[in-house]
Amino acid sequence: MSVSNALLVIDIGNTNVVFGVYRNDTLVNHWRLSTVLQKTVDEYAMLLESLLSFEKLKLADMESAIISCVVPPLLIPFQMMCCKYIGIQPIVVGPGIKTGMPILYDNPQEVGADRIVNAVAGYEKYKKALIVVDFGTATTFDYVTPKGEYAGGAIAPGVMISLEALFVRASKLPRVELVKPKDIIGKNTVGAMQAGIVYGYISLVDGIVVRMKEAVTTKPHVIATGGLAKLIYGESQSLDEVDEFLTLKGLKILYEKNKEYHKFK
Image 1 (tube, rainbow, N blue to C red):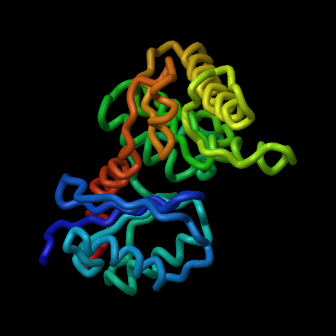
Image 2: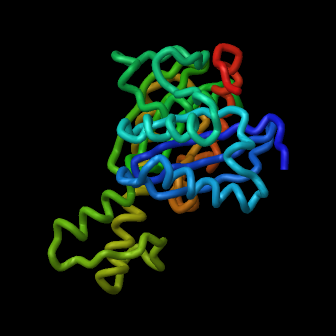
């Protein structure tokens, strides 16, 4: 099957690597794999080739690619995968890339690529002040001004990090599934842990968002994204919407802004 204008977008996070394929402006499909440093270029290519086959696609069909990465040891392997199996050098989100968004951080190079990608995607959609909350390995809160400037934000331990810390550091507490508990007052250890983590984390999110809103004179729209966004969104009083594909959308937008300066096939 010949696919025109097929774009591979890759978001490499600390916990998961998310792949997506765009054909023109349509997200054909997306896949989430565990981030494993020990996997080789060929292993990641084999996994992705297998997933693409469900859409009757293959890596060779990709005409271009863009990568966002917060795990430095994995950037070169994924660049090598694109070179070896697709025959292209991908765009990498980082210093020198055109974002159209001023970064008002003390050191702009310290800002994670995924945070910039999310900010660009959110502002492209709304063109107004935003707070983007990304529920990943860490939970990040990023403020975008009405002028489309990345102003900074906050970083908190992720939900899963908090849950795992209870199991690791408290010898009598078990490892539990992260689900919404039946009641805030747990009737057993598992229920009590789930209540503390889920409702405690909801309060953390609402508390930070409220304080960020108080710190600015605007009325920012609040977007949640990331793997655990839906779990928190249902009970949160501060999140306006969930967009699970925000990062992939941002990668597509940044590809469009930079493709004329980059050589592909």
